[in-house]
Length: 402
Ligand code: PLP
Image (tube, rainbow, N blue to C red):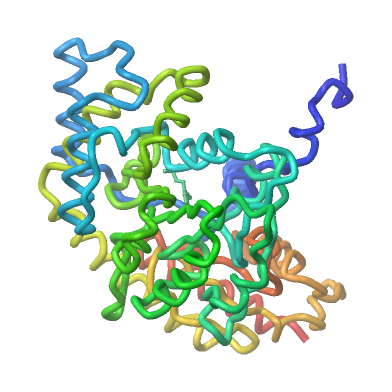
C-alpha cells in the first residue's frame, strides 16, 4: 500500500501547519528537549468551572445520546441569544447550527456550496486552513497579498480586483489569525460596498476571536455594518477561543436558512451531530456568567504588552501591534541574509524558525504557513514567565547572528 491509493484531493493538500508545529513541539519535549512553545493556537487557561459543571450534570442526567443534526434546541437558542446579546444580531433558530468546532462548520459550508472550478477569495496572512479546505472541495483559492503597512487589512480595491464570475466565497476573518487585525466600521463598510456589487458571492465572516480585542479596538461583524448582506453571509464562531474550550470541539454557524440546511444535510452524513456533552457545556458557556471572558481578555492584554515590549528590543524583528486575537505576526526581514554561529545563512522565515528552534528551543510558526513571508507568528496564549523566557532566548539567538 502506498500514497498511490490516496485521492487527488488529499494529495493536493498539506496537514495543518499549526497543528504540525504543535506536534513537533510535543515530540521534541518527549525526547527531553526544553522547548518554549509559542506555536499554540489555543488558550492555556482552563475552561471556566461553571461550564465544566454543566457538562458533568449532563453526563449524570444521561445526556449521552445523538442529538438533532443542527444541535439541541437549547444550544441553538443559546446561540441565538448570544448573537443578540454580544453582537446585536437577530437570527432565528433555523438560521443557526452547532458543529464540532468552527473548523467543522467552515469545512461543511464550503463542501456544501463549492463546485469544481469555483473560486474562494482569501487574503494573506490567512488562517492556515482556508485555502486547503477550498482545495479539498475542488475549488481554487484566490489569494490576495496582504500589506503590513496597511495593518494587514484587505482593501476594497484589492477585493474588487480579486472577484470574478467564478467567485463563490469571500472569507473575512476579524480579529485575524495570525495578524491580529481588527476591521473598523469604516473598513467593513468599504468592503461591504464591493460585496454589494457582486450578488453571486457568499461571504464567510470568521469571528472566532471576537472576545479578544485590545487598546480600545471593537469587534464588529460585517452584518452590523451591512445588514443587507445577511442573506448571503455565514458567521462562523464557537466556544473554542472565547471560553477556553478548544478540546470540547464546539463551534457554530449563523446564516441564511438554505445554507444552514445544506450544512445540516452534510453533517447528517458525516459526524451526525456535535458531542451531546459538549453541547450542554456550550449552553452554559454562551448563556451563563460571561465574567471569565473579561478576565481572560485582561490577561491576554497584559501578555500582549509584555511580548511586544520584549520584541521591540530585538534588532531585525518588527511588529505591528495586534489589535485582537492572541498572536504577534512579526516581520523578520531584518534577519534574512544573516549568518548563524554554525555558518548557515538565513534565507527565509522557515530558516529563521528552524534556527530559533535548534539554537534556543523557541518554537514559532513561519509566516509562509499563512501565505506571507518573511514573518513569524508568536502566540502569547501562555504565562508571563513563559513569554519572558522565550523572548529572552529569542534575543540571545538573534544576538548571535552575524
Ligand atoms: N478560525 C480561525 C481564524 C482559527 O484560528 C481557528 C482555530 O485556530 C478556527 C477558525 C477553528 O477553531 P475551532 O475549530 O476550534 O472552533
